[in-house]
Length: 277
Ligand SMILES: C[S@@+](CC[C@H](N)C(=O)[O-])C[C@H]1O[C@@H](n2cnc3c(N)ncnc32)[C@H](O)[C@@H]1O
Image (cartoon, rainbow, N blue to C red; front, side, top):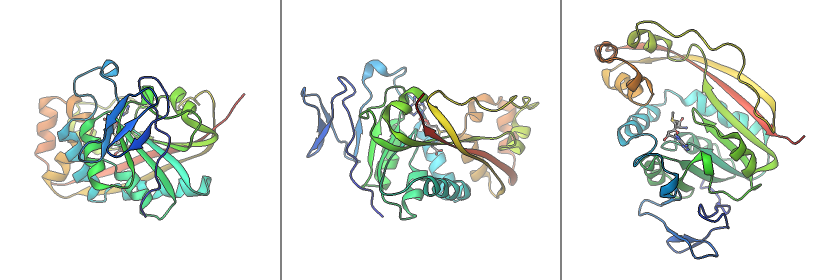
């Protein structure tokens, strides 16, 4: 189902609402942002960039697209859609903060929910890939640290294996808005980590603290196994994770020598509601 128009973008320079005219978004003060050929808009002012090409590289994005499109993480997408459906109703305005190449938004949309969608990522390569695959949603290059979104407008924010900035999420959400986070659990990709690192880090102690301004309404672990049957699939998985840079040369060579890898997937799905007081 195509997504409904997303109406709540704001100017990253002065914070006033943006309206779409033909192939650009404009604010009252006259700041104008062109929609790129692929259909996305760049709303990350150069002074807010910490590097020339922030976020995931073109290669990481291509590896993630390849890996996710093979369906290995389909149970995660399904659980995400179920969680969203269980805790919300009616047409939803929804932001995926750090959307990558858009896999989870495409999957949630394919369940037929009525959504007005904003996918945002700091990586131009990720947003470009996402926009090419879905012409009905709004795709933005921007940062979670300074969301180009009007305050108090969103029913739902998704942050999937991402970099949450809770104060910004709270700002853009409606008073009873939902935040759904998916993060890795202790056993996640353990077998890959055992191959690439000489020893594994001890697990983190205790629960993740509850961010200010949110209450916990649901939390679940999702664990399953996948089997990668080719060097390419193993290389894609490694390339889409920070392990590629953290591993030593020897660790990367160990992974490259594998032709098959059975893996534990262990993720935590946390559902928080915006709350006051
Ligand atoms: C591990 S990937 C997850 C991508 C996607 N959510 C998924 O699960 O397929 C993290 C993503 O966060 C993006 N990112 C990093 N810092 C960010 C920031 N400050 N604001 C928005 N996105 C950011 C990266 O470019 C990358 O696409």
